[in-house]
Image 1: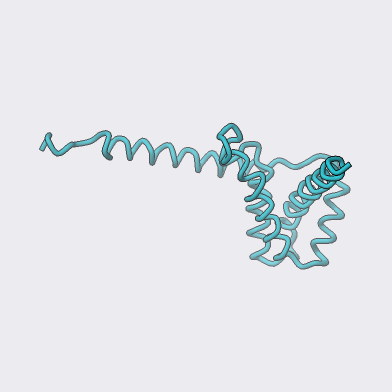
Image 2 (image 1 turned 90 degrees about the horizontal axis):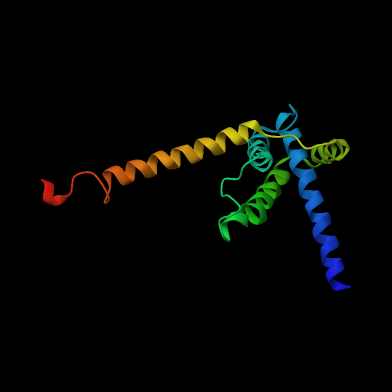
Length: 138
């Protein structure tokens, strides 16, 4: 009995998160949303709706960290920044939507972050302790 109640609550929470991500996606595009709320809502929605994660899920522990902590905390912050009446309207609109939008901007940003990390890592290896000139070469 307890496990089924836990599973039901977790399922309800997951649906609310999905709805709120779409509501924030709508909020980020609405002219009535304050600028700070637009920026946070847009960033959270872009990340949550991106087809790839910043930290891939196959990485132990950290792979699910964004799904379990970063996204929900970002949603909480963004929801607090959007005026209550507008958020209620956006949630109602999101609940009526069929399907989930995909964030191509979020995809591009995450790919750019991964490329920058790869370039910096290559530069560090090339010029750092594993490459470049060593003390005995000078």
